[in-house]
Image 1 (tube, rainbow, N blue to C red):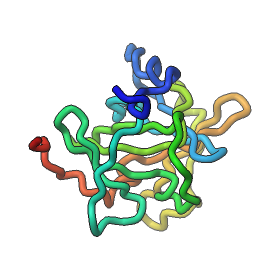
Image 2: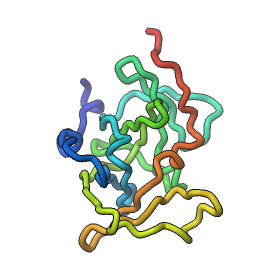
Image 3: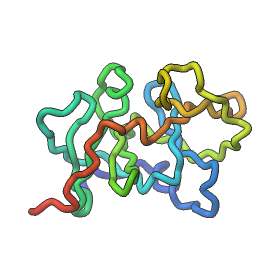
Image 4: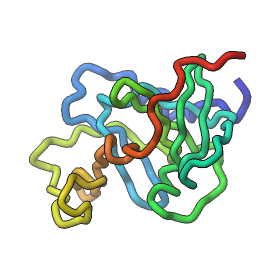
Length: 170
């Protein structure tokens, strides 16, 4: 692995405890805010890879990576949230999710930790946009004095083409 493909030390240990994944969320930072996705949809955390650009996609779709023979589309979450683009650094990682049987990668500023947030500590996100349907924010998880914005993973990547080929020919 090259230096830019290494996984930050704190990310290596986050996915090893799979005793009980109910109410478990992988939290990550975008700017100063903390977001979370259900650990059940997270398959791995990898360091930045060489990204192959794909034409005619939304600005926040950075392209695809070839991860052990699987083509994985990448979404820059910062751009998806209409935030200012920033250069990737040694803490920038890709969180690989498995949704509807297809992988998708989320580029995030940094991973934080896996948190267990009980249902009674997650406040409804009703009234926070999203119109009539289900919105991007699933809830607001309270952990001590902090709040993690729990994202609806399916809505986050709903417009990403998930039916990519299974393998890349070399």
